[in-house]
Length: 438
Ligand SMILES: Cc1cc2nc3c(=O)[nH]c(=O)nc-3n(C[C@H](O)[C@H](O)[C@H](O)COP(=O)(O)OP(=O)(O)OC[C@H]3O[C@@H](n4cnc5c(N)ncnc54)[C@H](O)[C@@H]3O)c2cc1C
Image (cartoon, rainbow, N blue to C red; front, side, top):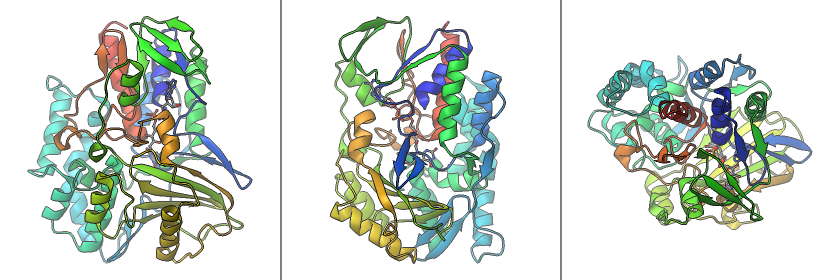
């Protein structure tokens, strides 16, 4: 996604662009076929659509996606203290606590787009104002856990908010405080394209092609040198600018450089299961089954062990069911027959009151950390290596420019990982490249 996004922006400014892709275009946002149905893999929730709109406006394109609000927003969170819908609707027993939470976070809302799309430079007034607004809301708390605990929310709401820290790919003690604020900011703004997430991939491919860019699939890069790439098979190609959209550890390996990534400092990986049910599911669009105990969850992830009960997201769309289990980023092939996977699927079914959740799903397919490791971070960490607590927010490191002719975009570079961070990161790199004369 990141590679196609920056390719469209560069081609839109008249650059001659070639995208080299080791497999099929899309990476984690791809397609699988299960039980006679097509599924879009990877992202299910399209959040912060203003970043997408800014991307479109830079390309001078109308929006072909027809984004539609996803019923239930961030989903129904089945906490050990009772179910919590996020956002909490008016009239719900937690609604006054939710309103207090939203009002605490509100001063940050007008600055979010700036934080996602502006190079983090203290010389930039808009960035400075946005960072100031963030720090006023987070106060002295550096972690999501610290912020949530300090505000004395009821246990059920606090547990649901902790769960959303996983937007950072980290447990709440390791996620920056910013991630405790996200449900208030994205809760009312959760979308999906009318024709499914796959439409985002098709659109990005169209944007690149319409500007004369080439996308070469099944063209793996085996070495990155100064202004040149070696492709698997030995061909050497030269370009005056290289922009990597790979996980930084993978890029370092292609440059022959060490890239230590200790397990304790990796974002999570996952097992994504896609199944076609025999009849439409009665589950809401999104259900969230958090770990019972975040302490045990974190302790397991930090040593690369399988958590006793993990975070699970369930997306139901007519006969399509996607079940995403959070797993440590150790590159393991946790397939459908693995006892831990079976146990977690059973637990999720029990918690949702839907025993035998996948029993009627013919030919279910599982994407495992081993698969994510093939094209991403070597352990399959979805958002790559975790930055330090205080560097995971706006003051993140800026490894966009590795040297004059080698730059990078994508999940592992711009903290936050998902669609808005990837598109925002591509907009930032496009701006920095323009300033650098490209
Ligand atoms: C199960 C799951 C659920 C998610 N849910 C959401 C969600 O609801 N909302 C959201 O916003 N985000 C979500 N995300 C995150 C989002 O999908 C990813 O962050 C995003 O798709 C990653 O895009 P990327 O371009 O940075 O990386 P990737 O998709 O990993 O792309 C990297 C590309 O580089 C290619 N490549 C690797 N090595 C080479 C090489 N040597 N030569 C050539 N090409 C190479 C790969 O094949 C791949 O295509 C989810 C992710 C997963 C896995």
